[in-house]
Image (cartoon, rainbow, N blue to C red; front, side, top):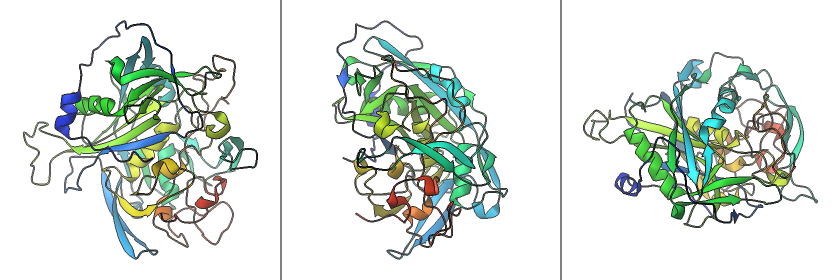
Length: 435
């Protein structure tokens, strides 16, 4: 079932909002946890969307267009940063806003995850020439794939850069040039504590045998809280990326906690009445982009089919999608992939959706690296970024002369995902297919 995109009118969001408090409060004792189907894959969504305006009062971005030879349509798109053809560099200011949740008598503190996020490949420079581990493909014993497997060559020469910078440089075959998309050193703001009403949140687990529990919160209710924050926090700046961070908080849809788990989203919208008085600014009104991500406690998802879905997997997904589709309106020829059936047939340029759950290891991680509460060891001392589908995959470019070449010479020439040959699924050794 697809839950992308979700669009909430601003008025409805304001009406649904409840008070946010600045300190933790005591809540009633927890009921029995909800058990979620452990075989399901995580999901992500987008919120809202904004028209492309001739405004500089938003995140720095550029416009490009590419012909899809399959249907003969030339698709236009906006992406964050500078046009790669200029070999220029852009640095985007980032505001991290930790959210501390109180749900059913338990606290889930976004502040706990912030140091690990700051130390992660998302903000620290690293070497992407190789990786120690990567997701496996389907086998007879494990038809879904997704367990921990060996790594190998990743993106030759792509070193001394952040994760998203490495991904963008590979996407446009700009490794070794002056082209960069850099996330600035984040400003970490004071945490905001949110008390979740009992009708909008529960404690859940995907498998009691692993003993990992998380907050399971109604997506419609939470999206209202976030939109309220975007419109009320004085430091939220349209030229920055506000990054809302939670720890072990997932979202459900359809008012059913079993319909879990949304692990992140990004969005955009015209800022109503922020210092300019009116949303009618003759094309120069501010447009705010933003993202929410949850740090994922290792063992939340089944390591047999979702090994990579831990720590910054959701963060890497949302940052990549924000960079390639900041205003949530880049469309492509509709695509469908068996690796992500939860999205159905979709025609959006969302780079993480086709490969959700597929990833690799990178960097040294010291946060939450012990066994789960029941003694199951799923960690390996690293972070687990998601692979990302690249523009030529969506554009059906074949041969692909846009992206960095694959690790081994191929008829396609360029790679269709950041992992290239390390992505074990055949659907990513060729362009996207239709619905």
